[in-house]
Length: 402
Image (cartoon, rainbow, N blue to C red; front, side):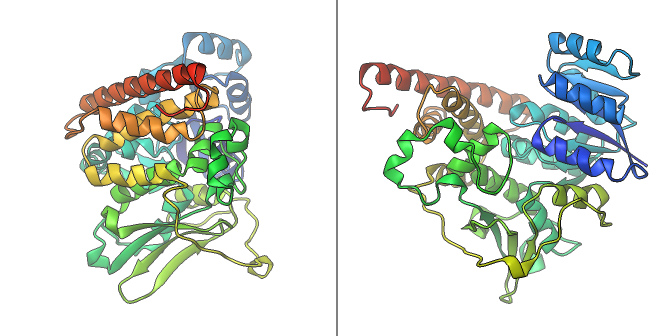
């Protein structure tokens, strides 16, 4: 029986993971659950799965959770140290790394250094510190399985002995599919007026607000491009993004002989979660079987970089290498939060990111400390750009650019 720790248990990935686990109590036991501040949801999960440990983000949240589950034998802790401990503990066999953003980096890296089976839903670990993270996985013989539907699809479409060498396996290209989000067909000149609620209405997937905005800007796909580079050893020129609005084909691998292998399924994250939990076996995920006869059409388009400049910025950061992806990720997190708080407009997001990338020289990433230092600098630069936007909006509402 596998001991499971879920980092980010109250998010959409965490909830889907718990749903799959509940279907297979004979195979899995929950060792630990974490959440940042959604204490009520975490308490409910603790009551259902009775973990040994529960970790939250602050002392106040820990005190409240302790009151809510006082009758349970679950130990309540808080902070990054506790997150790293549950991710690396001997009773944890498998870690679902589903904390959104840079906050997930330290515990995910701790799991790698402890040689765990890591189900990677936190793409920032690879975006921010790809070489460091992959070195830790290799050195400590950890197992890394992708949870993003696109990367899981690619994993399933590659040879079982694939060793991050596209040429050796006859791989011509990695084809990452993208739905195009809610604004695929909206007039570009109207995007300045997009509201947070509009940006969070994804046509196919139910996700948190931050990742929903990333999908609307296609920064989410840009981060996935960087993640694919590290997971599969493909350079930027061998990774292609294809708009596929139906989200039925989750991604593809093109081979030198002209073959294209794809993984298809209903758009439900329980499928890649179940695949990774049981790999190399297959288990029931609770997802309905795909009925191809009900598919009216499957469409494919090239992405428009004028509509989705964040995607272009991500490709630029990947080609630049070093700390550039960490700068990109940090500036995006700050910009998206500012947009959700209505401090800046939707089209200001890419402008803020570009400002941070231009303002800070990027270089090698020899240590996690160096990565985090650049992360902090990018956040400061992004906040400066946001302050310029808000100042100009007050003085001249027609000029929102930093």
